[in-house]
Length: 226
Ligand code: NI
Ligand code: MN
Image (tube, rainbow, N blue to C red; front, side):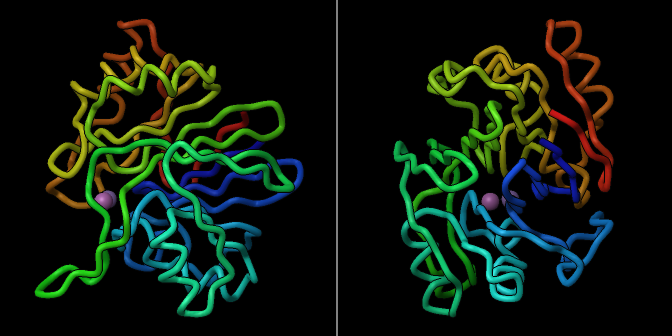
């Protein structure tokens, strides 16, 4: 399978059977190499509601007639706006035509339209995707948590983990997360989009290597074959 990074937490995962777009945030992302109108996909997967993960989800899902997979509240929210959806919740998995998706825990918040009257959209999740004989974990936005050890038991070919700090775990906690998850390769996400989450991806990769982990800090537009 081919994993292409579009900056922040957004990836296109191309399996043998389907194209999965994870956490689409393209038009509002200053680091994205593409715009939402250029994406073609069969499924849109969302870790949580925040617009830096769901910002382009509705437009893309409707244009591509893609199925939007997310927690129940997010699925109902975008379903009411016209998207084709499949709602799930943490701990639950489902066998789709391309493979299996299981939602995992994440420690964070989940809303849209934050301000006086935010719309809360269930709990934040991570995405555990099994396809083509590979297991890929997209951690979404999260703090470090000990139960990542359970997620690692799946045997991860790849883990996409936030290192930006401030809104999610930072590099120190992300290194501990790698000890828990033990992926064959990890890709740092959710950093360098704005000054508040500025981090050095290469320095993180070097520290991870010293601890025995393989980290690939992808530049937006770069792809990885898994
Ligand atoms: Ni968030
Ligand atoms: Mn975020």
